[in-house]
Length: 419
Image (cartoon, rainbow, N blue to C red; front, side, top):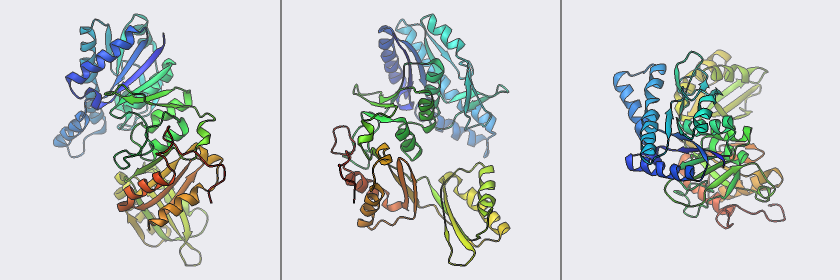
């Protein structure tokens, strides 16, 4: 017997029939002798409906009240699920994030989990219940309801698995697992049988939507195996787990992309100590996350150009703020471009194999795709390109690293380094 935490996304519980299907699946696992905690999302489209409703009432909804409203979507799902479980003859209890003891900070709409009191959940498990917990929500130190942001139900599930010391966290969704790239762009994309936490974290943060980055962080920190699989097909999924020697045999595991990015360039910045802090300090204080940063000569002695990227949702806000900063520090004009994309290759094999960057850049150059910015880490290389070339770049890189040819959907490195 093992303790399993399962999470079902919005499409998995989109209507009554699907909720009943999830209940039957959970019922079968319970009959096998497992203890099960189920984390459920709001039904597909429900969160968007509630957001629209809020904006009908107010053009700028109060953040606290918006979180109170949005949290109801998951509560509907867990209640309906438990009704279905009881009709199957299985004891079940629904718990909101508050009732489940999920404490967060007070950043409404993007709260982060700080602690979980598992006592209530453990008592119900001990008594033979299936426990259904509302994903995406918790409560702050002042007992206000908070939400965790988009993808927050993944985070709830893995955090609960860590707190309960579960044997595995199973994420059920509308895809079969983690693929080498987006199958909607590359028809020959392959499903990975397993992937390291580190690779999955990079892929999630770089645009892969199959698993939320903060959920992967919890899994990696507490060593919780995460199985990503389909709610609708009984096929093997992808195991997200610790790195092993087999994973290092492969240079590249996947190609990711995101169009949710904008580039800002501050020209003619005085090239003296402290200027970067003068720019990025206020940007950070405004809650704007900066990703890639490049500094280069402006062509004028004693001056430099600084370019960086932000999410498209923060682009206009950042442009306005940076223009003010540029005036204050005596810099030149501020230019922006929100019609760009970031394309990345990810693989733990990059740690020990050379020539990967050259191969990537050569492949893009052969298609006349200009690289505007470059960012690297031990296991990833990201480039910023014109948005219109995104799909082409993904397909070219997927083919260049032959991600379709290995049975596991990964590129096996040759003995000699790339030239």
